[in-house]
Picture 1: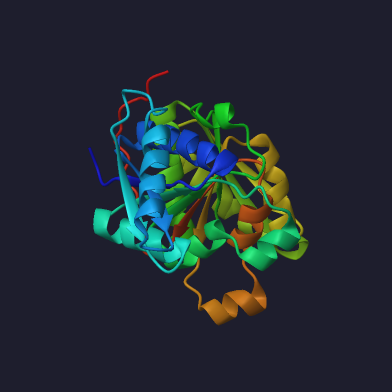
Picture 2: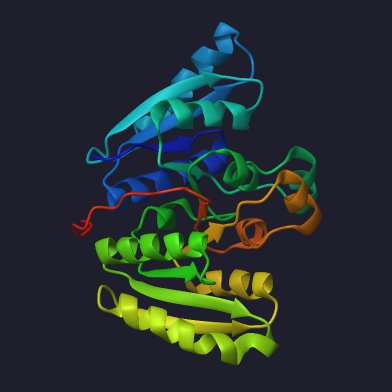
Length: 272
């Protein structure tokens, strides 16, 4: 077993989605799960309630997936998850997709996008309105948004490893403006040829607005991986980011590799 995967458990459909996606990630990465609930008060009734909810969710995890639970007390959900990730030395944080509308997310915040910046590990987010049963299936088509930088190279290596373990196809997505399409075609072909040795690999050049094209691509994928550039909170607020846009609008689960994050995947084939 490798470093654990922390699954953020809240309530309702978001918790269902997070646990289902966590089970899939556990099988792909051969890593144990830690279901984490955050109490924003130290009051015993709240901690007991969360402990019961985590126990109930843990009972839905298949027997082949090692699973523990943690209740953290913190000033907010994200600080509590950060604490669990750090103390468990987790390699991945799994978050259920928000079932709130855009306005409600803007007012209450978005745990998935904020976690990419603060969690200190890779973050896997379920799509909004996901089908919990579908999230438990191993991916058949894995896409990686690649632009040749360090973060996207790390995402591509992880995507290839996950594809090999799941027996999936790998799609390398290169999103560029129309003016630069010819310049990047050769680099994309080289990357595809390199990874085709390990898994069936295809390259797709997406010309036009990168965010819109990557969001559209998620409709055909079972999993998308992205690298997230190291960027200050102010820069992200002013300029936005491709990863934040894709996370909010994706039709499939999205795994984001922040700067310096590493995820271990063993080479054995996933059980089907």
